[in-house]
Image 1 (cartoon, rainbow, N blue to C red):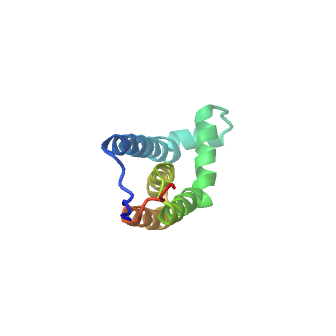
Image 2 (cartoon, rainbow, N blue to C red; image 1 turned 90 degrees about the vertical axis):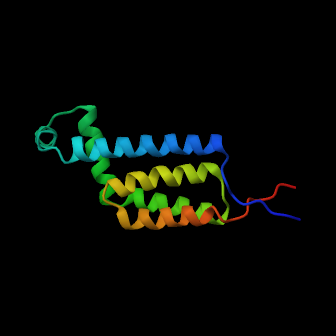
Image 3 (tube, helix red, strand yellow; image 1 turned 135 degrees about the vertical axis):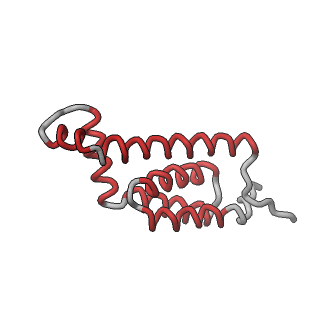
Length: 126
């Protein structure tokens, strides 16, 4: 019996590209225009209650505790064990956030695991 490797189709790769680019775009927006912007930081620390300040606080809490990196690593390990497109997409999204938002080490390991998962056989349904 021949096993098939985990290789997304062209349509699935297009969806993964959309997920990856949207994730990177939003992460870059958060980092450079929300978290690192001095005017936004002063306004939010001064007591401004907007969705932008709430998003800023949430992003800071999440990357301080390396949530993006650990989520990417967990998705990468699970995808290496049992390759699935949804896990791959979650890993790509979390790794994109992690690499841009200061969780580089864990996210880089997760990206390596996601690449390795492309050489794994797909689970066979009987």
